[in-house]
Every structure is written in C-alpha cells, then in structure tokens.
Image (cartoon, rainbow, N blue to C red; front, side, top):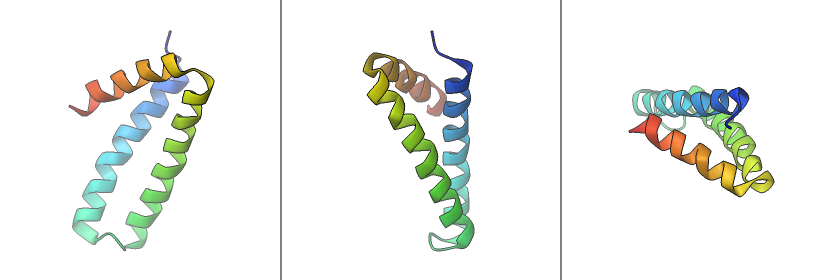
Length: 71
C-alpha cells in the first residue's frame, strides 16, 4: 500500500518538474528562481531515492505512479 505521504511527495515532484521547465524556459537556466527550483528538485529527488534503499519493490510501485502522472 502506497502511503499518502509518498503520494504527496510524488505530486510535489511532478508539479515542481512542470514549474522548473516553465521557469527555465522563460527566465533562463542561470536565473536565481530556476536555480532555487533546481535545488528544491534535488532535495525532493534525494528524499524519493531514499525510499529505494528502504524497499526496492515499493520504489518500483512509486515509479509507476509517477509515469502515469507525467504522461
């Protein structure tokens, strides 16, 4: 069973990805807002990766959820 906390993390990653692309495209890759979003994405992805080390099978389930939200 996927926890609500992990689902929230997935939603945050997906939304931040959209925002990061938008900001990077409109303001440039070296703009402070783009860099701030990129740092936040790193933080979220590191948190997400830590789930893998705890349970690889659970991690695979989360990846499938992300794929369904991105496409």
